[in-house]
Image: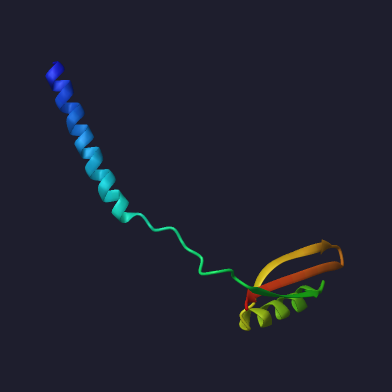
Length: 84
């Protein structure tokens, strides 16, 4: 019985080593930044939904990506960013 447990433990160890070694080959390498990213920003204030959509679509067509919106009520700033 003791020999059987030792063989089972050895088998589990060997399988674990094989799976661990194979899994490391499938791992995605960490991303490495190529220097500091520089951004430029563009903001506008608008409260009409149709105007916001039109300006946002126009900005997107020029490579801008929405960064965020801040404010409340009729004072909302819509900000976009893109790589320099």
